[in-house]
Length: 440
Image 1 (tube, rainbow, N blue to C red):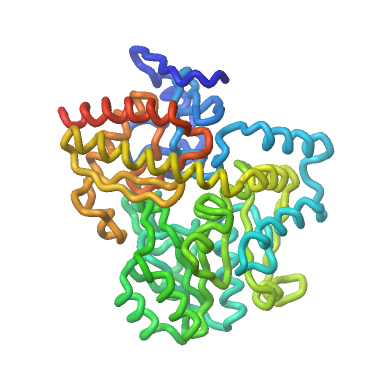
Image 2: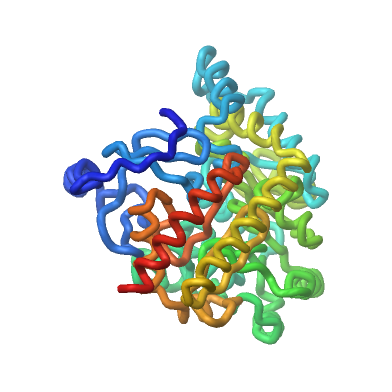
C-alpha cells in the first residue's frame, strides 16, 4: 500500500465495511474477536482494515487513515517495518513452530533481562492475559497467600481473578465485571482506587497479611493514559515490602514503549514481577513475565507452580520481537518524546482556540484527550468526563482520516513514523473535527 494518506470521499465511505460486519455478525459473537473493536463505546459500524504501512491504515473501502492505535500498542516502529518483516520471512522459510526450544527464545529473554534490573529470569507466553494470570499464580505459590489487590479501571486481561472493576472494554460495554467469574474467586480480589494513598494504606491495613500480590499498570492505559502521582509508586513499593506482598507491574502496554527499561526504569520503582506484551512481539502474539530467580524458579519444570504453552516462544513471534526491540535505542525514545510534546501542545492549542474544554495526559508515546475541565487521576474522574463528546469527536476524526481508539477509555499510541508531516495532517483533521462537534 502506498503511504499517501489521502481520503477517498464517497456517498457512503464505509459501505463494504458494513457488509463485512453484517456477515461477521452471523459467524462471530458481536462480529468481532475482541470487544472494543465493535465500536460499542462510540456507536456505528467498525471499520474493516485491508493493510497498513508506517503510520497509515487502509480500510476495505479504500479509505486511508493516520493511525493512533498501532494495533493497540505493538507498532512502535510503524506498520510493516522492513527489518521486522525480513526477520519473520527468514524464520518462516525454515519452519513456523517446532514444539522445542530455540536460541531465539533465549536471545529475547536476554534482551528483557538486560534492560530491567528487577529481572533475572523470564518465561515467554502468548498473550498479556496469559502473562498476568501466570504471574499471579506464581505470586500465590511463592507467598502461600490467596488474596490479590488490583486497582479500579486497570485492565490486566480476562483472567477470572482480574475481571473485577476493570477498565477498557468492560466499562465501554457497561459492565464492571463479567458473568462466568465465580463469586468465591472474585472475593479474593481486593480493589482500591488508583492514585489514592489513603485508600492504599487502608487496603494494606485490612488485608496486608493475606495479600499474595498487588498488580497494577504503572502508567494506566485502560482508562486512557493516567500517570501515577508523584510518590505513589514509591509508597506502594514500601507497603509491599513491609507486608511481604509481591508487587507486579503489568507492563504489557508500557514495556519497551516508554523507555528502554520500560515504565519501571522511567519512574524509578522496581517490582518483584513484571509482565510484558505488545512491543516485545513486534505485532505477533507474544508476551512474557519475569523477575528474580528465587521467585521464577518456583515455576515448573523445576518448581511447584505449573504453567505451560504449546506455542510459547513461537519462532515467528520471537523473531519479530527481537527485530523490534533491537531498534529501540535512546535516540528513538528521545524522538518519540519530541513527537509527543508536539502532539500534546498542538491538541491543547486547537481546542483552546475553538473553545472546547479538554485536558490531556501523556507519558512518552502514550497520550489521551479528556473532554473535561479537570485533569483526571482516578477511574471515577475518567467516568465523569464527557464521554458523549468523545464519541462525536471519534467519528468526526474518522471522517477526516484519523483513526483513534474507539473508546474514551483507551490510550492513543504513536510511533517513530509519526513525523511532522503526519502531525500537521492530524492537527488539520483535529481542527475540522473540533469545529464540527462545537457546532452540533
